[in-house]
Image (cartoon, rainbow, N blue to C red; front, top):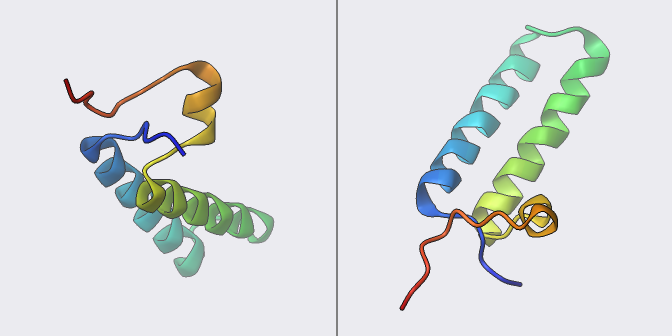
Length: 68
């Protein structure tokens, strides 16, 4: 896998995951949407830990600094 997620992007993804888990767990959203938030949180944590995002690959986005 090619790394295409930078360090700031990883932190933002982890923050989004934490907010999504909090919103789903506390019941801030209706019942069917809490499962969607859990899935979003899992995807955000997974892509953050792996350092690679499939959507970034499709669209050619790279937030990772390139080493010369």
